[in-house]
Amino acid sequence: MSEHKVVLITGVSSGIGGAAALAFKAIGCQVFGTVRDINGASPLNGVALTEMDVRHLRSMPKRE
Image 1 (spheres, rainbow, N blue to C red):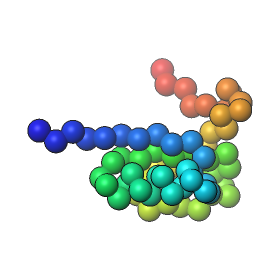
Image 2 (image 1 turned 180 degrees about the vertical axis):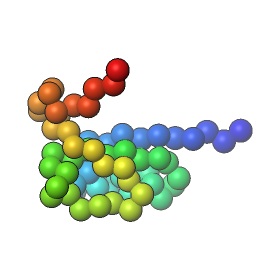
Image 3 (image 1 turned 30 degrees about the vertical axis):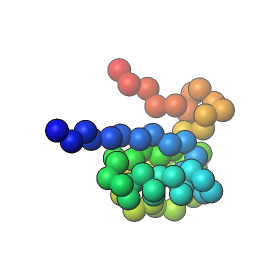
Image 4 (image 1 turned 120 degrees about the horizontal axis):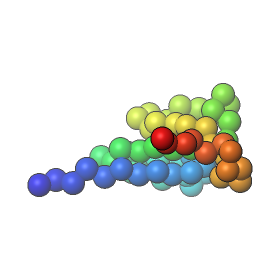
């Protein structure tokens, strides 16, 4: 049985976060990435982006 991997990476708009997101996507993981400014973020092929600033609790999405 194959196991479906899901990855959440903060700070995917640049640097190691973006590279890690693409690397995990390349090996078949479902990748969710966060950026501080969704309007200024470049799309990453196959990576689901959401706006979140880990420095501010109020910016974190809430699940009911």
